[in-house]
Image (tube, rainbow, N blue to C red; front, top):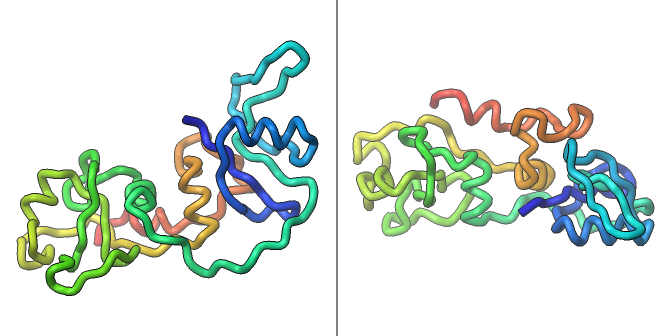
Length: 176
């Protein structure tokens, strides 16, 4: 399902919305298409517009300052690009670096994406106790980074260069 990044009138990321909601905002002239999916269009009897990947609200919306991105299992998988932190294969679950049974919490810095085989092998131990090594260190994305990751900003040709800041993903790709 396609998600669309919504920018405030000042070009700061606000949220992601469904393609349907993005088209409604554009048709109601509440937003402008800033970047579209190449080659895709929404067509109807009286409508023909590019499929929006990024829209910008025409008016500035005041939002409360959010210092931290909310933690979620999906967010951890997206942050780690669905790659296992132990072997690099496709991740289907998350793993607690410090297991919950040893006091580990559901936080950005204590969870990583993992394949079910490595998650089972590590079991109820720390990576050191299990003799496993993390390929990348977990990090806490900023709220803006989390939004950009959710719409695939790191994929080749994903979003325009002016929109994608230097995300911490470059640090996480380096071996620990």
